[in-house]
Structure formats: C-alpha cells, structure tokens
Image (cartoon, rainbow, N blue to C red; front, side, top):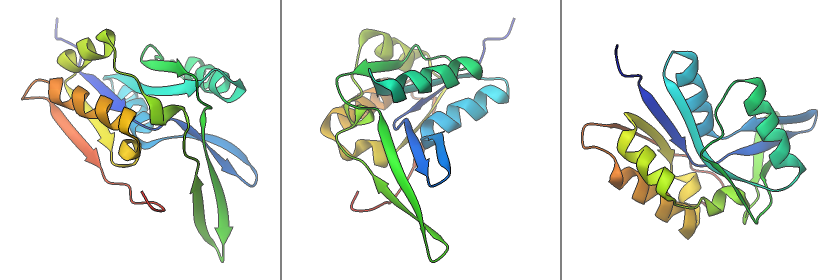
Length: 158
C-alpha cells in the first residue's frame, strides 16, 4: 500500500467579512483543503479564538471533512478581514493581534513537520513574531526532499 501524501497549510485562518456576509479564508488553509480534494491528506495549521467565530470555523471544517487537529485555540480573537469595494475594486482591512498571529509550536506540530511531504506557507502570517517563529521552525524541521510552497501576499503595510 502506498503512503498517503501529507500536505500542511500553515498560516492565516480567518473570516473574510464581505458586505453581503462572511466566508472562511486564508490561503494556506484553502491550499490544504484543495489538496485534500485531489486525494492528499490536507492538514490546516493555524489558530482560532475561543469565540463564536472560531466555533463557526470548526463547524465549517466538520462540514467539509477537514481535520482541525492542528488548529489550536488561543487567547486571542479569531481573525477577520473587512472587505469593501471601492470604485469596483476590493480593499482589505486585515485585523491584527488575532489568533493566527499566535500560532504556537508544539510537539505534535514538530512531528507533523517531519512527516509532511509538502507545506504551503506565506508572508502574511509571518507579520507577528510568534507565528513567524512557528512557521520557520516548522519549515526548518521538514525533510530536505519535502516540497515547500511560499505564498507572497503583499497587503497593507505587511
């Protein structure tokens, strides 16, 4: 039996708050979800708050059969991005000091880094020291032959 391909998406996990409603977002999480749809084991790695928005994210994960083992609950609010249209173009206000700015490193995350065949991580989630340290430690702990996808996301002053 062939070993399953394990893909981690580490970084932002949030709600995009559109004028007409909210949608779950975060490029690394979307990446892991789409990899799962293609037959890999997609594992989002992030953090949510112990609030209603965090509970809603876990509910969406359950509905999509997306594992939340590596989504930690931290003492910060779940991330949001306020999205508005200005002259037909989207603008974004990315809230700071939110849960995904505080993704903690753990023993189980270190183990995942050693087992993962691929990871998607971005520049945006590295805006804070805690998540930057976790992401860099995760990527540095991966096997040399693992695929590392870096998503450059230039928004606001980040």
